[in-house]
Image (tube, rainbow, N blue to C red; front, side):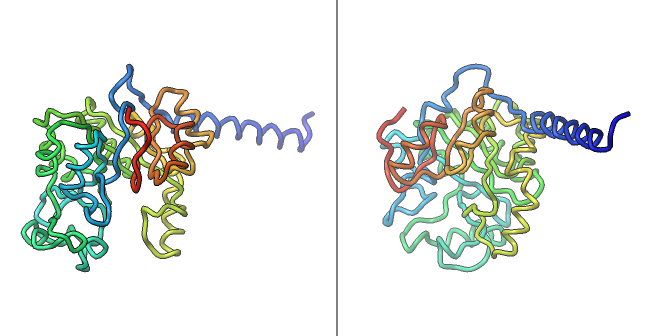
Length: 285
């Protein structure tokens, strides 16, 4: 007869095996079947910007083009449904005006200036005109709800664009939308430790709730829904066991955000490309 202790150990062992198998299933990736341009470039975070050239501005994109760097940029919708290039939910940090971008129309947004310069918040169409296919784009979808309008309008704008581009998002719903509706476009899942992640500038209480609610996303446990082609993960966790395993499976790994040469040298050991700002990497792939 099996003792209670033995039975308990068997149950624990079976549970551990089940968790391991489930983890492998949930974190599945869909890496490109052959070598792509994705890892041939380094990505300038919101363009090549500095104190004189604001992030996500047309001059920042032109500077990246001139230097031969690919560009990471952010898109979200204005109140009247225009696809704007802007990172924050709130306008204050970049424009000095309080309120959310999505609560203002295109015309209202055009009256604002970035960081006290003469630069306006650009539309995605304007950014595409500046880049003109000269370097690849990595487009982060800033969707804070279910996928739909933003993804459709983004895809419509990109449909006739002849340059190289890929999309990425923290939202698995956005990534899944492209998997279902435009599977030919490379798609990436963004993730981080949501408790420490500076991407979410909220109170400690809200951050705690976000970290727990998004724990599965943090561990890439929603990959089975969206099957990303590549993973963009925060710099300080790219050497984790999970990321190393996904890289062995063939998924390109991007590190963000790399801010100096020391971080760059460290990230190169574990990743295939980096999203950088505040310096210029030593080599351009």
